Amino acid sequence: MYNKIAMFDTKPYDETSFKKANAAYNFDITYLEPRLTKETALLAKNHPVLCLFVHDGVDAELANILADQKVELLALRSNGYNHIDLAATKGRMKIVRVPRYSPYAVAEYTVSLLLCLNRKIHLAYWRTRENNFSLVGLQGFDMHGKTVGVVGSGQIGTIVIRLLSAFGMRVLVYDRSKNEALAAETKCIFTDFDTLCKESDIITLHCPLLPETQYMINKDSIHKMKDGVILINTSRGGLIQTHDLIDALKAKKVGGAGLDVYEEEDRFFFKDLSFSFIDDDTLARLMTFPNVLVSAHQAFFTQEAMQDIAKTTLENIKCFFENKPLQNEVT
Ligand code: NAD
Image 1 (cartoon, rainbow, N blue to C red):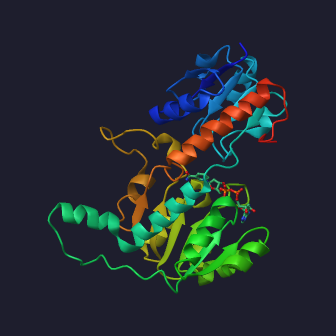
Image 2: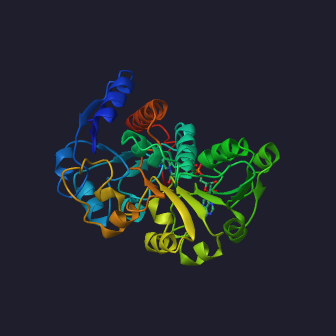
Image 3: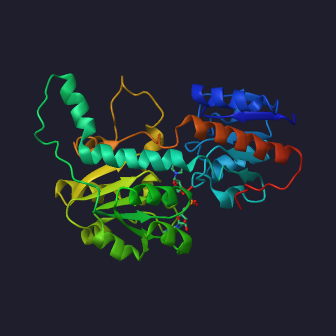
């Protein structure tokens, strides 16, 4: 039984990267397409280790089922762990995660999303395909000289700060702690959240979803922002109160939003629903705005990040099987 891993929500690209990394480990991995739910948990019977992704949520009820099935380790192939009820799993099974994988993947995607939205490349792409070569409505603004507010200066935020500094932007940063070395290196300015909201032309989110960060972008914080502010979220959907964002888009208070994450994304993202319809009126409304760009949680998705994720996940599992200290344990 030891050596056996059940991997949920497996996509072809997951299987490719894990098969490649597993050549060095030789674990017995069962690749399962369904997400982990209380109905699919049985597929992992006799597997002490489950490998989960961001939409394999474990609540108290599912934690009971997994404990009954004698699951001992949840190996998350993600950085975030807000989808696991830690109180319910505590003392019953261990959780490990991938605290670091190519942070360039998410940081570079963040800047791509921002550039695309500002310069309206997503609109130009469709226009020229229809032989419409008009520029009307496609005007953007120079990034140079503008102020960007970066919330969270961890691994990803740091690279975003470096990249946007290189555009000649004034960079304001809000984090729980000041990174003096980063401030000296990039000339970014650490400030409070209110000042960041008031002075930024663009705000990009790179902090985790926690009780204190949930809905940090809401009608009150949006009210303090500059008219026409651009919001970018490649972090977690729950950082933004989406109804307030929609109101602000309708009022033209917010000039654009680049969203790689959405609070209710697990019902839609990573699925091909092109033969169906969106029964979530909030998401459907969001996607009607020409100045809103939604992507399906793809910021992490580079070859390098996928290789890092597979290698770290299998190394975490190896430490568990060999009873070694779990450096990437979520406690
Ligand atoms: P990190 O832990 O290195 O950095 C997070 C930063 O947020 C830290 O500096 C921390 O001090 C700061 N922070 C924590 N609480 C805060 C608060 N209340 N107010 C302000 N700042 C606060 O994490 P990271 O690797 O940079 O990742 C950031 C986030 O990006 C993750 O939490 C995850 O949600 C998201 N992410 C998204 C994708 C994607 O594909 N879209 C991929 C990876 C990570």
